[in-house]
Amino acid sequence: MINITCPLCLNDKTQLSPVRFEIQAADERYLIKTCQKCGHNFTWFKHEVDIESYYDDKDYAVQDTRKSIFYKIQQFEYNAVLKKILSFKKIPATLLDFGSGKGLFLQFAKEQGFDVKGIESSEPRADYARKYFGLHINTDYYKSGSVFNKKFDVLAMFHVLEHIHLSDNLLENLIQDNLKDDGLLIIEVPNFNSWQSKWAGNKWLHLDVPRHISHFTPSVLNNLIEENGLEVKSSAYFSLHLGIIGMIQTIFSWFGYNGFLIADLKRKKTLSLMLALLFVLPFAILLESVSAVFKSGGIIRYYAVKKNHLNK
Ligand SMILES: [Zn+2]
Image 1 (cartoon, rainbow, N blue to C red):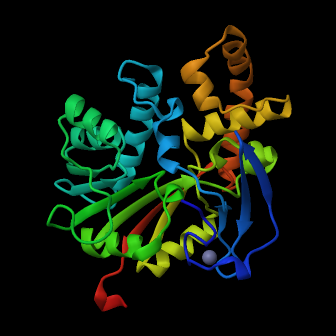
Image 2 (image 1 turned 120 degrees about the vertical axis):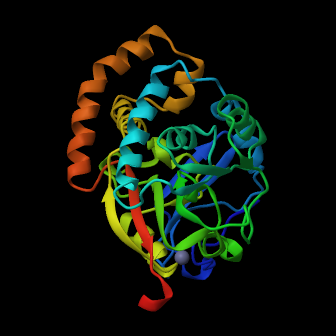
Image 3 (image 1 turned 90 degrees about the vertical axis):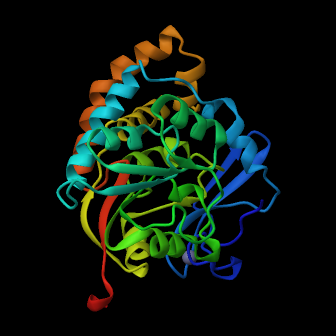
């Protein structure tokens, strides 16, 4: 694919800003531009890119992490999110996770008593969720319609929206046909306005081009949610795993680090990398916690409620 239109409002090149960042990845060149119509920042590239190959590579390889410290951290974090969801929706409630990956969030939700289903277009990830957690996952690439022939109380989208182009009303279709009229939407994406993003510039971990084609700010995400008939009720900017690791890479970048930390932690865990990580960790936790207080943490997490027709 190539990408020369705004992934949200589909505006073309006639109304785009000057280049914010230029990123050279392997032999390919990407630009970050701002849409002058809706204010959204996105990855612009005019050469043909085989996006699929970027998901098949080693950075995204499926590993069994159930015994790792990362699993425990994610369990702790997702359970806090589920507690928040339970302040809106009581058990028994149905929950659909769009872009459910290996099924971790669904598994934790199931343990809390939710009736869960997932959508995940990556077969290896969906298989992992089925094999290890016994989850029900649909792997068709979503375009429109009701996926499980019913509407859900909760629709979750964790780090999905930055990967997809919202052509053909994808988000609108998903919400209209799969979420109940008073349903809860929970959305989490990287925060392009975060301090870790501003401090790292084009070395920001969550820029992750070309896998990420959208780079959301809180206001653009808020507008997108409201345009789809929902109202944001609660927000959070702190993520224990994705926020802290993003801040660690930002601090590393000040000392000349040029890599992709998630990939390096999977593949080349050298002693010097682990020592540097342990040394930087307390500062990263501190800086990221302060960032989040100022709504400038590495992620944006919105809880939004679908307005029923009577309120429109
Ligand atoms: Zn736009």
